[in-house]
Amino acid sequence: MNNIKNFNTNEFNTKTNPEIMKNIGACQVLCHELNQVSIMDYQKRLELVKRILGKIEENCQILTPFHCAFGFNIKVGKNFTANYNCSILDAAEVKFGNDVMVGPNCSFYTSGHDLDPQRRKEGWGYAYPIIVGNNVWFGGDVVVVASKPGGIVIGDNSVIGAGSVVTKDIPANSIAVGNPCKVVKKIQSNE
Figure 1 (cartoon, rainbow, N blue to C red):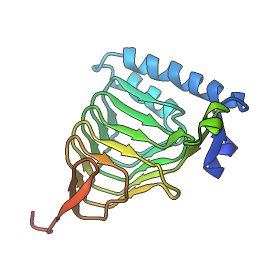
Figure 2 (cartoon, rainbow, N blue to C red; figure 1 turned 45 degrees about the vertical axis):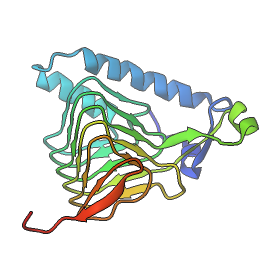
Figure 3 (spheres, one colour; figure 1 turned 90 degrees about the vertical axis):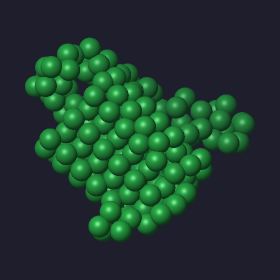
Figure 4 (tube, helix red, strand yellow; figure 1 turned 120 degrees about the horizontal axis):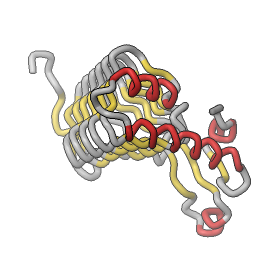
């Protein structure tokens, strides 16, 4: 699978670029295969994850089911853990730092459809990156939506509370919760 150059411009058209669906299909085959492998067969699971993701550091654990659109735009750091039902629409880069924990049922959306009805009907959409720092914890059922140019950045050592919908950047050392997600507390080093 290869990067799709149109995605680097933050705009794409699903109806005029057949490579998009070809790449999604290839990734879906690999995700389906991963989701069928026994949790006890660590080596086979790791081999498939390495084939799906663009970059993977040591000690990565992804519980199934796991779903992503392209895979090659996802980069995970050391000691990355994704719990059950993680979904990543990676039409743009999704980068997780080291020691990131993703709770169950979390979703990361880099792409969406054009708001203009005519352009949406023509197949136009957008894609913006999601960048997650080191030592970030996402509680269960968190949704991260990169719907603005420049994407979303979640700073180091932050905690995103369960059920939150993140649509804006979250600074480092923050506890953030809610829909829309807002910082409710700064994390002190002794907490």
